[in-house]
Image (tube, rainbow over all chains, first blue to last red; front, side):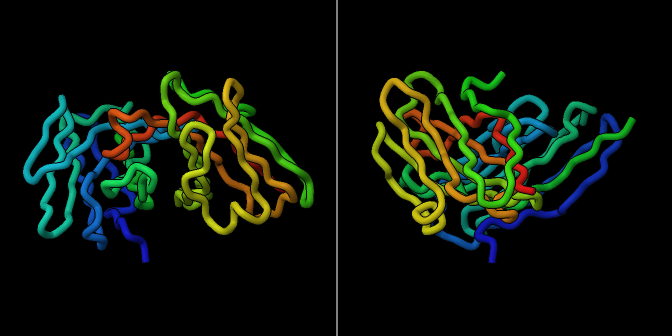
Length: 112
Length: 116
């Protein structure tokens, strides 16, 4: 079973609309959560991190973490065509040697 | 643009052939990771290094895969005898002490291996 599960698998959003992505972890050792974005033909790039309960906003992106339920979400406001990509939720323990554990991703498509 | 440099971007090998990929981590980043991303987008951790020393590696890496991160040279990942199931995107990532404990990784663009 995947330790980091994402939903939905894919999402179509109109330009200017809101995209909402979800992520749940089954491992309570995870303390840090990340959202990574991967455009086709490129490597993943860190979008934002969230370590504390509550919301974190960076521009058009807002992440929310509920540590009790190990649920993380990402909301993309005013979606742009350039937001079309694979979005990965990733989690890490307090041990950098472990690296990141990734979910299987949500494919976001923004249509005009 | 990514500051982690991976070469080659693409390689095609026959079954049983060696496949070698290289990675130059971002300057000042002592920790280097190799991941395999398969066609289903699943990430599999392979091995990581800190200052040329192996920190952790999975069983698969210990058998057909070899990797090293010599000082003053690119890191490398080599598959001794390629199998069809090795076809994937191989991603190198690096991190520095300031962010390593939180897990932030800086990825290269990857080397896409196709085994015929």
